[in-house]
Length: 289
Length: 259
Image (cartoon, rainbow over all chains, first blue to last red):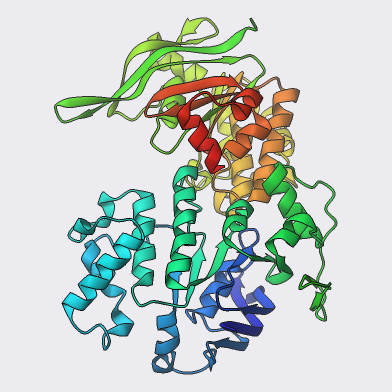
């Protein structure tokens, strides 16, 4: 077991009214449990605003959850100072959606890559060592090695995403969180990146948490899919099961839209109650009930 | 042969790079039959959007139309003066852009912005216009038209804004709608709803649609025929099913493999 999160909750408060006298509360992540085993890719799907990215940021502790525990590689990282988190942070990395804003325009590619070593300065203490590692990851993501003194704006979207992936790999992380990492790319580049991710996974023994609203891409990469809706995981099962026997009405709606480009008209309102839990429906197919 | 709403012949658009100029649309031929939905697909940078913008003559100043003609209702749009073009734009040809966030002016209410089209192109009085705008908001499937009318763009979500933009584009009942990646930034569930909306509009209002996209999935479920574009050239055209089933061009095949 690489990552186990339990009862994670996160709410955001919003002040409304002219003087901010009213507070409204949005439950972005509501009582989420999730287990990720080593080498098991999980796809997290759901519509925008359902809390996917918030959950990813909580796992990385870029955001602090209101309650619940996160156990990563045997260490509880939901509590504790920045120093304590260092070890865990080295082993989990994130690739962001927009390769145009995730690379600093004033950094050349060498600076970008060097930044990836920040948490591993002790081990990667000489420049030649780091260079060697950079070149190795570049060849793994099919980038040429003579780009070090160039700047992000000189690259296309697909190349930038490769650079972002290379940066996340230099410290040999165990878990890679890909937040809509291929959504902004066109289909041909998308396929290339998806194939690249499959190769990298074998090569570096990576585990992916792949966040996307594109079910077809998720299907290609992940063994398991967690469907998220309004802050809750409503269904969790193997990719095949989700596609062939979806149980939750929201999963069905999502599949109809993604596969047949059809919207479900008379979708009954999906209501949640506090005592709903993910229940095993057999063969590891979990449904929120 | 069925009558065509638009016929593009040998359209060439070039961009100047210093001394040299490069053709980004190269001798393109494309026609859209009345009442049909045509998908224009290709990778990013293939020149799809440039064709769309050429039709309504909204090209960036660096781009120049070097030759060819765009026949709309039998007349060449490229010979029209700017003032005449303004009568066509928005009235007979509507356009929906990719980015619903930037397509609206943030300081005006949604209703006012849809109304603007009617104010410019029709002679309806205030009350009739308001009624029409509310009707349009309803047609595109937004609930509570009165509230939406009063809302500012930032009050709406991406999908809602996209719908509002479609309402604006069809306000004057145009013959042709150019939709440039209308669903690429949206969730799959919202995307499905927008696709259904296009299908409905096509039937109800006899609207022809040029759908510009890189998503073959959308095209295969919506379009009657399809044109595949790469490097400024249209490499394959045909009925959607035929092209999807037995692509003749290599690039189309690559594109299909990725989908």
